[in-house]
Length: 613
Image (cartoon, rainbow, N blue to C red; front, top):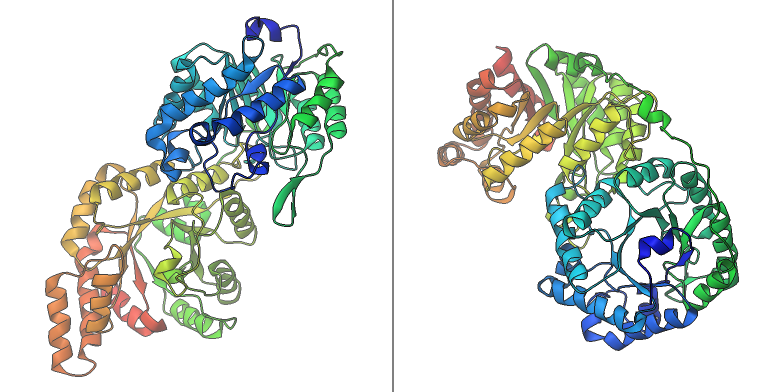
């Protein structure tokens, strides 16, 4: 009969089981199948894996419920079976464990970004974890194993959810990258201190890397916490062999490292991806005769937490920021990056605009999701060769969060200072309908990240030395179909650190004025997008095919009558409409971003001259 887990762990080494997902894969379950649902459709397979680990001699069996939360199950269409899947996972493990082994509820991340990086709130995340954990606890688990977390914010919500439901022991694991830090760059000393403070009964690392990298992290963790340490590595890094992921660490190698973990101070060992009953036999053989090592811990305060960084004041960030800070009206013109590698014409247009007193050039990122020169490189050339400021549009499409951080650190290092953060268009809106997209975070999450860089910290909370000093802009859409949703998103962007906003092209003045009234409680400087219509067809395209743009009937009628009047008259009418719009709203905004359709910068200047006059 097993004693209470906390009581046993106090004086003994505990061995968890090994992989579930890769074992199911090795038994022929396709990688795109919902492994958690196998509790219902393939219970014999799951039970067979549990029996293999019991036969190997482990102390703890983990339920096959790692991804059985609402968000992950919904991707497979099984979210309505959440309770059934989780309870079945516990029953299958308990049937094999009997009264001799402990059953740990396996709970993994939600599979999406939560705030401040994603749209899912902390409360929503906590509720999703609570829903899963309640089902697991109701069926009778002995402890909760939180596994493979990258984000300390997310694992904190999972721990809070456990305590909402029960007082069972929590074993909390973060996962690592090759440098020994978490995937967001948080040092083991830092996240171990957090997990300790938040009340984990045991804490440690699992998954993503092999035994070697984990050992150095365990050594670092052992210095800063007196809590039991848990270590559950992969069987090395996977290798593609004839289309299958193969893990190459031998059982003997895993056993050798398990012994080193215990000697370093770990009290829980086990295996993650790629480990099998044979690996666990070797681990058990290595650690059974050992006693938990005595550890001497020290109070650890990461150096980056001691550093008080003074953010760069708004007026000192860039000449454009200084003008905004003084409350002056700013002007910019949008120029698309060129197709191909020759920027000559675009640079000539930028020089012309500088000579005519335009404050900055807006450079879209992947305009309409088509293939063009990267805006970051064009921005650098404009600032270096022309000497005009740029507002770099940086979109979340096609980059993960860590890649964005690397990009923006580099962009700041080479002198770029003004950034407009946008979520981005899906590729299917552009020239390549079969292209795929990556949306790791949206504009709100990226704004939070840049604000953190502006305060001297990276994603993992590590000091970066001198902070960045980006002027942070965001998009705004006064013509959104769901305007309440747009207002909420705007409020979140301001809360995340946005310092100015640029709107979608404005044709409907009343629509803009209504939007400005509604955002008054969180008002930041607004730069209105102005688009000189080139023709009736252009007006029809903007009205019907560009998301978030509304061209009023009276404007369409003016363009229609101009088109009937004479060839080319609609182009002049488009400029006149843009000038009238800008003059009308000038007193309510702090700047204008005027587009230059087809690169016609003279037309953009004609519009800007209306407010100068």
